[in-house]
Length: 320
Image (cartoon, rainbow, N blue to C red; front, side, top):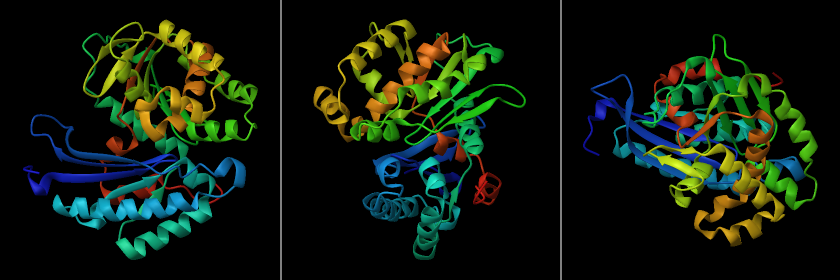
């Protein structure tokens, strides 16, 4: 906490499975940011959406407690609550009115404004974060062959680099798929139909994948057949070997809880990782990207360079 207090900024991403706080200082040497503090808390906000059609009450309670804690942490970095940039994504979009009522209450009690953002804004923020990512030494990316894969808890956004970028949103994420599996109501065919829609701009590209838990999972596996290179913020995957590994995992027909038993080092988030891996496998098999880089950069990192007053442009309008 020795950074210049006048240069500190904070961003909160309320995702469908977890909530992330990043506090960063403006870099003296570049236009980017240096992370001073980061915390991720698993909430499972979207856990009950596929089966009950409502947001998880337990998750909302935990989110309030977590943001209260985040507010106190930001205070130590001399960041007032009105300057905290906070957004919510797919789960809040699906349960819009319920989420909006909750965030209105949160603002009145904590003085922190949360914006429910569109899928288009979500992937643009992820793309902005990834554009600042310190690339792995072996990466030689041509701009026309780069695409983005933002795998969330309740939705997945895919985009190509371009002006304007091609963007599509898939109504599946790791937590939603895992929840549907538990209720025996998951349709792999429907997921595949959605993924086929992105083949034209994903095939033979280098994909930057934002999904912290998958990145963590493969980093824990270490450099070897699956992972060719690891850096502070990401790892480069051997696409063919990863696809083979994922097929072997899928053949076991694990439930989310069985997957946790088999890979206990990943912790509670493995409940969503099983669903994420199913989606990831179908994406690799159908989309046929050339290379995949997994990273822990995401929406919160993309928020850092925006002023808190700029977030209205990303806000979802009910019914839109």
